[in-house]
Length: 143
Image (tube, rainbow, N blue to C red; front, side):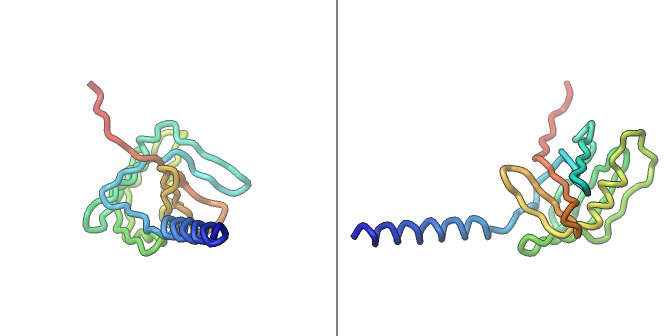
């Protein structure tokens, strides 16, 4: 009897963990600010002003992009955890140093997958060594 209960509990826990990990990421209506860009040789780039690097996932698969001193947009689709940005365009102002504009936009163009873990959005590129980390963005007006 005790072995049967143990096996039952193991099966239930296994089922719960597999369904939790296979849940599809939902991005529509969410906004995210960049916290770090990770690259080759364990390099890490931290934006001085994370609120200048935003992704706003709108309805109808529209994406609004803030990229330092530039604005952009794209369409997005998410199937399972594969995230695809198409028709990505941005303005091309020259941002003051230290800007992450080029690195940020290049990683967006090369995006392959997305996952949400511990309230962080992780966007991975076609290179295993290159990925970006975001946290939820909540607009707070200055009064």
